[in-house]
Length: 242
Image 1: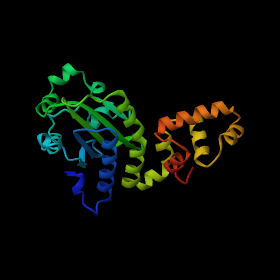
Image 2: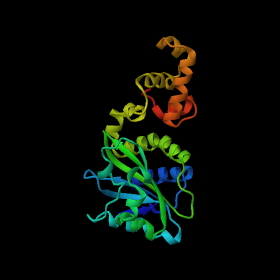
Image 3: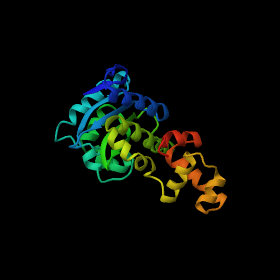
Image 4: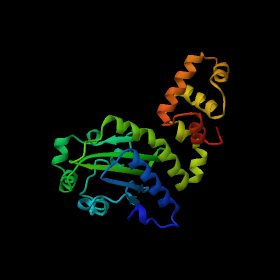
C-alpha cells in the first residue's frame, strides 16, 4: 500500500524515514509524481510513500501500485528487470527506446496521465535491490536533464545508507563501509577513511606515500562521488567507524 508522505503513521519508523528521504529528493530533483517503495524479496513492489501529486495525477500512485500486481503490466524500471544492472540511477531512455515505450502497456499507462519522462533510483543491500524511488514528470515540465541525473546519483549513497540502516540494521552495520565506498576505487577509499578520521592532506600524503596534489585530486573525486562538500559531511556520512 502506498501512503502520502504527510499521512505516514508515526509508529512506522521505516515509512517515516522513507517519507523524509523522499522530501529531500524532490527538493533537489522536482517531480510531478514521486514514489519511494519497498522492493520485496521476490522483487515486487511493496509498501511505500508518495508526495502529493497535482489533482490531474491524483490517482496515478495508487493505480501504478495496483497495476504492478498484474503479470501483464511490464514496467521497464521494475526491480526484476534491472536486478543485474549495476547503475544506481536509470533514466527512461536507459531502459526502453521511446518507440517501444509508445507501443507498450506501460507507455500507454504513462500517456494516459500525460507523463513524459521518468527517473528511478535503486537502493541495494548485499547486492540485492531492496527499495526504489521513481520520479515522473509530465510533458508540461522540462525533461530530466543531465545535471539532475547527476544530482540524483550523488544522493543515492545517502538514501541507500539511511534506508538500509532503518530496514536492516545488522546488514548496515556489517557492510557500512561497503555501502558508502562502493563507488570509490581502493585508493580513494583509503583516502576517504583518513579524511573522515581527521587527517590533513599533508598527513595523508605522508601516510600513503603520494604527492600533495594527488591527495587533493583524490579528495575532490571522493566528494563528487559521495555527494558531499567538505570533510565534516564526509565524516558524518562515514560515521564513527571511519
